[in-house]
Length: 141
Image (cartoon, rainbow, N blue to C red):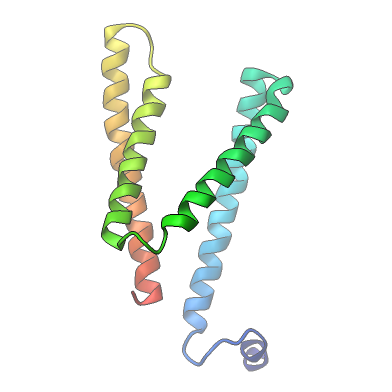
């Protein structure tokens, strides 16, 4: 039965472990995204109300289209090392902006937000580096 499934899915001999790994990874990421998306939507609705929901979807669609266009324009032109530097820089910027936006108005709150930004950026970089290394190792790159 597994051989028939391998033939239907065009899985070569010895690739079954990789296919199962990526299937498990995809399911894990999908579950995390589902949980995170539901939580984010609930927090958004609680904080801003339902009247901003259509605006959020319009802005999200426009940003997704813009990011997709930029990615397709530069994906093959940028060397891999530079691409990863840019990805890591964007992750650091996201961590800093997120902490800055959520910081309080006192000097102690700003210091705490800066510390939070550094710790968050380090965690982002470690997770991104691990995910990229695992992906490349599985792809044999």
